[in-house]
Image (cartoon, rainbow, N blue to C red; front, side):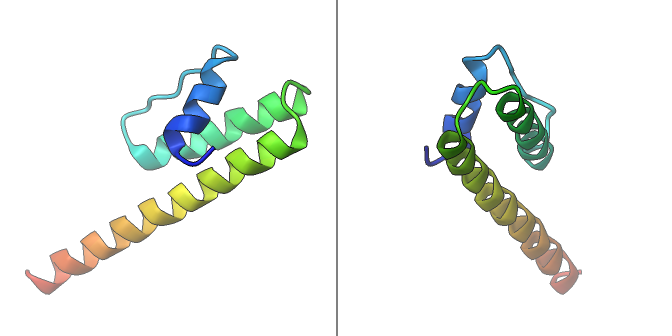
Length: 77
């Protein structure tokens, strides 16, 4: 499991589809849904850990991108 898409495909196996319109929101809700699936005992710890690490990385990349975008806007005002 390497991408947000991979994690979304995992959730899809359980009938969970996440699309809120903003990528950051999708990542956050996907993380919540992943936890619910893990707590229900539907996936094991290794799958949960791997998926969670992907989501943490994607969240960090998305927030850094938003931060950099805001810096550029300020610079060119």
